[in-house]
Image 1 (cartoon, one colour):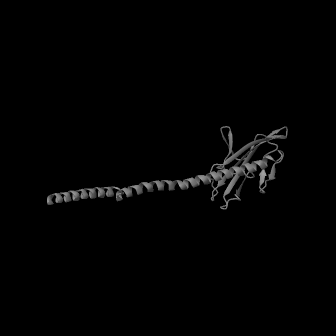
Image 2: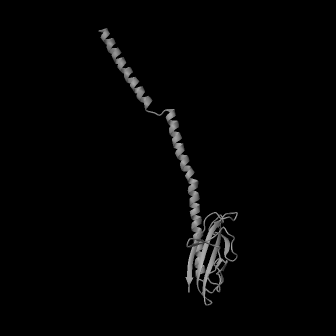
Image 3: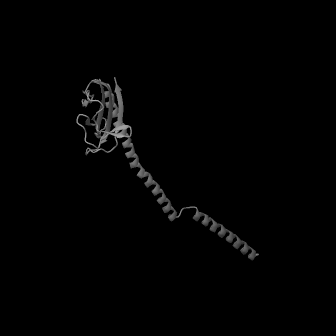
Length: 196
């Protein structure tokens, strides 16, 4: 009988050891190894660095869009003031006190101001050529705390018939200038015709 008890005891002990071994294996497999943790951290860091690199590009794009929008607003505002003037006028002062030349009342189909560049059938103001006196000015954005500077240029083409101005074409361009007064973005251009 003692052997049976011993056998039963060793059988019970073997079963206990087997269960303990299985439990240790399960416990050992339920976590991450240090190597797995390092690889996961590396992958996460690559993703974070990728996202962080997008932030400055996004901010620059946002600034460029704001600058383009402001340039268009300024060009349109100037165009609205020019269009309200009689065709026989050669100069006027806009709402900011700037002297604005309105071209010739005697010469027909000649560009005054600009300089104008044609892209196919579309006219644009060139900001790479020297500015024409009386047809440009530089100003600071009053709403920008950094005092961003913009340059406004325009051109006028008069259509004169028998000494009477019958129409004028106005091309107004505005573009932001950098602190060194070199242009950094393409201009916003507004082009319209006013007839009597």
